[in-house]
Image 1 (cartoon, rainbow, N blue to C red):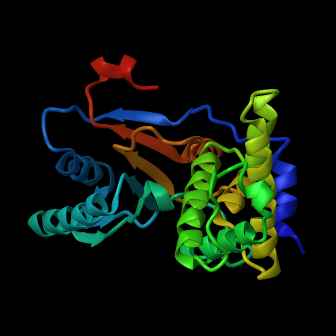
Image 2: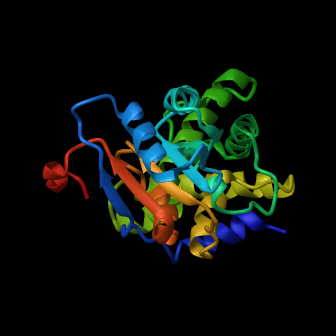
Length: 260
C-alpha cells in the first residue's frame, strides 16, 4: 500500500493551519528563565506536600534545557519538602510525535538517506544534470550518500513549512527554476515509493498527514517555554490543541508587541 505516495498527492491540495489562539504568560527577562519556570510550576501545581504534574507536558527549545529543568525541579522539590511527580518534558523538535499515533514504523535518518540515495541512483543522468552539473560516478557511493543527505535536508526544511517538491513546482509558475524542481519532485516520488516498499513512514510526510486529518490530541496541559520561530508544522500541531496550550514567554508583557 503506497501510504507515503498517497499522502503526497493528497497534501498537494491542502496545508495546515498556522493561526495561534493559545494563552500566554509573561515571565519577564530580568532573571534566568528556567528558575522562574520552576517557581511558576510550583505556584500552579503544588498542593500541600504534593507537587503533581503528571498531566503536564513542558516543551523546551533543546535537550540541554530539558535536562536542566528536570534537575531544577528535583532540587526545588527537595528544598520545599515536596513529593514530586514530574511533568513530561520534551523538545520542540520531538513535540509532534507526542500528539498523534503513528500507524506505521518511521524510517530512521540513515534509512531515509539510503532511500534518497537509491532514488537518486535510479534517476537518469540527463535528469540529474538538471539538478547537479556533474552527477557522481555510479561507483562513488560516498558521493551519492552526501547528495542524499542534501536532499534529506531540503525535504525536511520544506516539510517543516507544510510543503513538498510538487507544491514548489506549482508555486514557481514559469520561473526558469521550474524544470529543476520538476526533476526534484520526480525524485521525491521515487524516494517515497522506496519507503512504501519497505512498509515505512517518512516522518515528515506522517506529520503533514496527521495535521491534514486533524489527528493531534492529548489529555495533557501543554506549556511551551522559550520556543521562538516555530515552523509552520509545529504551529499547526499546537493550533489543533490550542485550548490546552499555554505559551510562557521570557519577556515582560510590555514587550507584547514583539511577539505574535
